[in-house]
Image (cartoon, rainbow, N blue to C red; front, top):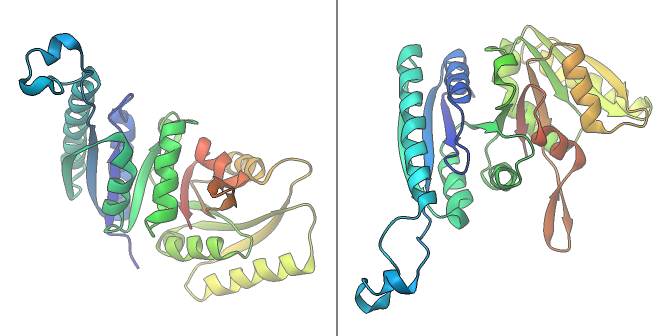
Length: 285
């Protein structure tokens, strides 16, 4: 299925999504021929109550003035959406924009709900940001839609197209889902690398990788397969090094999490890539 509808959530507090990241998101929507919908989350923060303010509120209830955090969030939301509007009109990309008032506790649920009516969510990642990681995790595991992630810090180094694509392949359901979601991007790519990270090559790994080469060929995608030796490193670091050494524009991979005492903990490779995406990353669960 072609990608025609992209969802772009924008962080407004404490640090807003940068204008450069917004412009890059609009540019990639234009490359894909898709419309893009931006939602800036206006963080609702109640002002702290005090005996002085209660004296002027009927019944001694909570004060009516806005908290400074809310004022900053609203201002950031307006400025981000203005930048989004300018970028979208300049690029002639179909677009909509909205401000969504929401508490911090309800933000993830709101964004998950909105993302379910899009083909994918586009996320500007702030490096190793704990608060944002929780939001991204919710979108990954609860929306049913893939995410297209990119580093806000490294936005100036990102390509505006997906000519060179790598697939992180391990024959899992997650990786298979990611390949299926990325198929329109694979079909338009010039070069596609299928990569499996392992301690050593085995017949089963070779069979799986070559089978994916054959499957993609039926969809008009010419791909190559290679096993990357881990050699004491981590899977995430191995893929990161390959991306940098081979000028990969887009990495396609499945997302993992493990159950631990009723908490969900992201798998190592997933966390490494989410913490600082080495390029554009399409991730699905």
